[in-house]
Image (tube, rainbow, N blue to C red; front, side):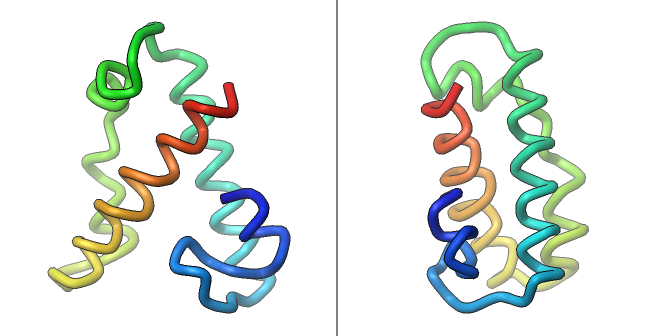
Length: 86
């Protein structure tokens, strides 16, 4: 994921603006900070300990499509990527 951001791409490998990249990088740092505080264990155990309940509203609003994308690319991919990097 960091490689994609460095190339100016989002989680779906689509081009993003510098402002969007900064936002994604900030979010990834926040997820990494959650992982620092999370108990050790498997990815599934750690994922369950991270509270991202307020994030879909911020990213997706009422859009079911965007909420689905959030679940796959942020709650899934970003947390897994940060977990593997720790």
